[in-house]
Image 1 (cartoon, rainbow, N blue to C red):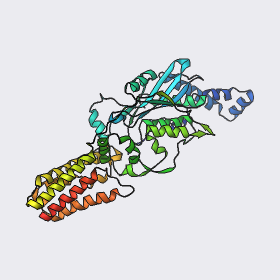
Image 2 (cartoon, helix red, strand yellow):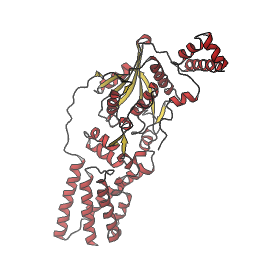
Image 3 (tube, rainbow, N blue to C red):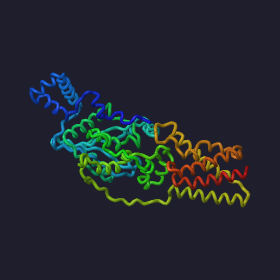
Length: 424
């Protein structure tokens, strides 16, 4: 598992570096100059130089941050939530942070979901989980133009922060955008555009854990199924690739890896009885699109394959003939899927693809059955039957899962293994 939020500046980082954030500077100066009595007290206790050094170093820090500007009292910081798109990477929506200050004509969007297609070996790094995502900053106008052109809705929740919290959050965003901090190793479930926004809001508000940490009955896999409903083939691909970790129950705050869930949780947070965010407003409402569902789904094809296999099996017993070519096609499909799972499990940094239950019924060992000599050995055939049955049984457990399209295919495998077992 990769280190989470390694580049994110948090309360602990700032405290350890003995720096005060800029909203603390006026407070420190006020304490330092509030009267001779207080001045004498802090000098007597030896704290005078500590306050002075912190103020001086903090001022130098802000002066050295490129583009750093003081927010006015009219500034607003808000969270933007975007609806899903047609591309695979946009199927789950998006989250970003907007900083708007009319006094300084500042209106920018901080986007943790940026990646560069020009990165060397982009597709190889993406497949192996080694592609860095980046915190980018763009104008609000350009951000909206992109989502309007993609016909994706955009909603805004203004954070109801005081001046000190706004300054702190803005400083964290700017510090996070520095070249040495802006890149991070993406993890779809644990470290993405939504979880980064969630965590930096907590750090900026500085009130401890704001998002509920209570246990739920949900799993990561269950959470993404509604998003995948419009694309059965993408759902099959995800369900084949994801491992056991995505079937473990998670906390409520972990559900916020999805932008829609983060938006809902933010709306329910209250501090001292007051909401953290204002009611959601719609910045752009996408035009409703009619999605035509195709009958040619993975389940359709596996059912068709099962029906074909049953016909071939009946024909074999009737005509006393062998259709070994059909079996070899099935075994090759299982082997190829097994190679993909092997790659995702053992040769990538994806922590969510390990301990995959699909490896029981789809693994490279199926290639052994392409040999007629091996395919006639009863103990080997019986071994593969046990693997398929085990996968189906484990899928019925609370932390087990197989895609619906797998069950007809598993039934066909058992039938054909049984046929070969009787031939032996």
